Image 1 (tube, rainbow, N blue to C red):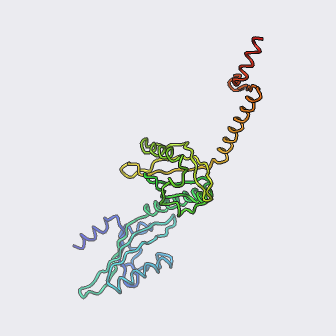
Image 2 (cartoon, rainbow, N blue to C red):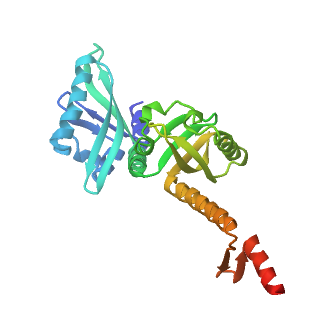
Length: 294
């Protein structure tokens, strides 16, 4: 029976060891020993402090003390510093008792979770990098449910539009958008759902906290659940107020110039250098016809 259990312990992929109340190793399996590049007999009689830095040894002994004092198992995450890096284990310390119920040994098994820890760290670092990019972007980054409810907006919203972020999240986009532009925005979001593809170029007015209207342009991609169903949108919005005001002013100037030309009986012409085409308005066309036939 002892040989059977020893065979199981030696063939497991987990670290297995026994220590006494003082933290002295009574048994270690090959996986434990090979982690340090040693043979099992090297560790027999050594303590936690002989193997690990004091801080790590103290942490292990504290769990060991609880096993002997309470007679109950203890779970702990442990770090194993090595010359070429660090390994992480999820350990379970279990009491071994004699016939009187007295704890005589601590039998610990530990599963290597290094890859999981490294993945978690990489994910955390990636999230931190993304958060930094989001918080430092001059454009608004947002997420919406498929019903158009904001689930996230970046701090750029407050910088550009004045509303505190917590007054936007949980609200529909509709109250913030100019009533005349809501239908176009709704159709645009509907297109994201129907095509399942990125959509760009929608332009609309958004109400600033001070009551004025700012022009924005937006692009969005669909957010999907595990089944692939579109459950929302992730997008960016850029302020184009200056550009739109310039376009409006240019259009108004062109209209005034056209009216003035008509009132004065003056024609207007232009030469398109790109296409090598001469352009003129109706009055210039009429004047040229008169000149031709005179």
